[in-house]
Image (cartoon, rainbow, N blue to C red; front, side, top):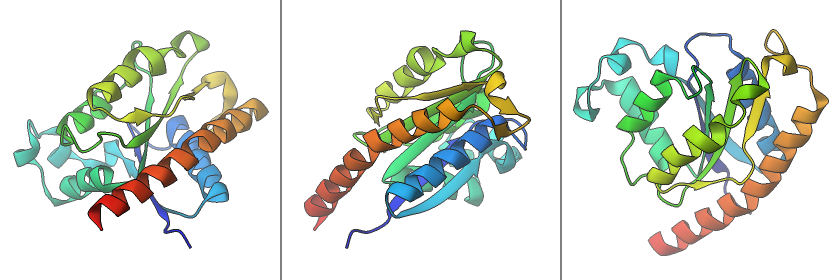
Length: 188
């Protein structure tokens, strides 16, 4: 029997409810239908001033430290953000600036974003993938981008979204399992 994958989803939305959180919840449900997971959802706007006022890791409080450690210790990370002016939110970048530079090395990361129109769909390739490349993460080949036309409020309407999420999950689960097994073997 394999252990549950520790999955931590980070959502860079600036408010709740959010379309980005709805997308991440679908991704977590789809992951859970493929393999056993132990998941945690971190909504960055909820971390408060202890997070937003921190200039560096030494400035953060207990809840923020727990969120950072959860990401650093996860077997799989979902990194999701709404698009603002062609890129990720400032909260999103600030959080990953505080993550230990080498904690995501070779860690599987699924990238997801939401935006007002399809014009922003390349945010995953042109903004998010380079950020996680710098952090030496293994980014899943298929990112998931949804525009506002895919939603009614925060409800996902477009049936093609489910296919995209299914494909992204099918790509990442075997890699996450293999890397978790390798890490366990090298520790043991």
